[in-house]
Length: 275
Image (cartoon, rainbow, N blue to C red; front, top):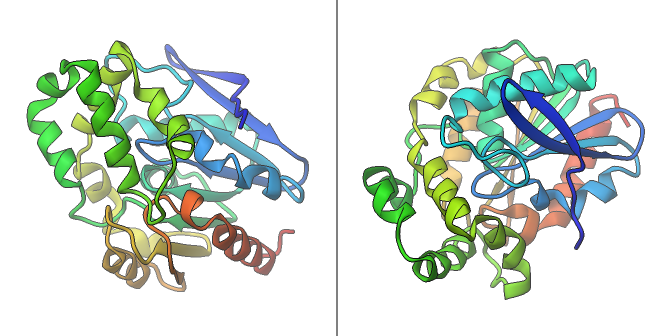
């Protein structure tokens, strides 16, 4: 599938790549890690039949710059706030997955970015978080970044497969693995893991009751990266939020159950006054 982020937004000294589809009320799609905006490739065209859909690659991911510097959650919310201002959007509907969820929450609660609604899909939001691989890489980043490429290329598919309930073919995995293959891209893969820090969600976790828009939470019942119990806990912390568990889905619901996202998202958006 040909997926492109043809537009460039300059944030400080960095280039952030983005794209849009369709016309209508704005809908912003946010990817997680170690993925990129391609995770929305099947859903964005469908959603664009009724909306103007915006998507982008976070700093350090996809086609955006991958600096040998800060690509943590500490900078991502500022980029999102700047992008929404650049697009001229006022209270868009936002759909955010994994690290995108943490970024959307931080932009809302720290930077004052308002949303018409927020749909969170298996977000990084509740302490503690970080897979065993994350914890290991954080302590040994230089060793992982400098390992022979063939070893890195063996780790990637296994790691990404663990984000999915369904057995993924090489064709399904390739768009996700290819963006991390090569000396510089390999280093950037382990850099973003090493910079994962729970303090960035600690900054906002105790403020979730202050969220100023309707919230829907979708969670894969078979998520091995962030267990569904975290989702139920998050739901209890956001008054009035909706919680939907999705059977047959792991962490990367966009691959396991895209039809569930489409169904629940469209119903939620229609119930919040925007078609």
